[in-house]
Length: 143
Image (cartoon, rainbow, N blue to C red; front, side, top):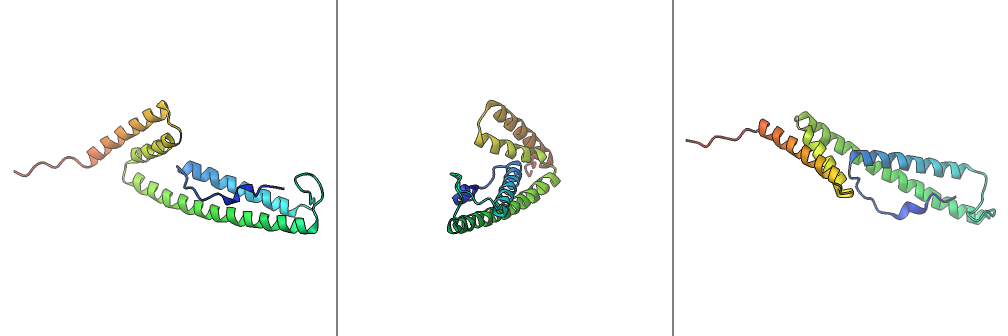
């Protein structure tokens, strides 16, 4: 009965919307696992022996704290997703989706640098640059 081990880690912002969504699903699964364990009548410790009432109560308190922590983290992630989806919508509405793709590739490259990611990042950057140039033609000098 130990899915409460990772409750002391600090909040780390996701690199991308995809990662945020994956973390939200993982946290939801973790919470479901804790709920199943809390509902179980099998009060066994990790070594297989039956827990005393005091041990069970201590474990239950830690499990509930872990559940609350994961619920707070889901709240943070949902907020992060909403903020970034709004930004994505705004950038896409402005017509420069290539810029969004560039930042997604950049985030991936920061996590795991590879030649393929670097190439994709360069292609997206060039497409974004061309789109920005088309939207904002150079201003002719005043005569």
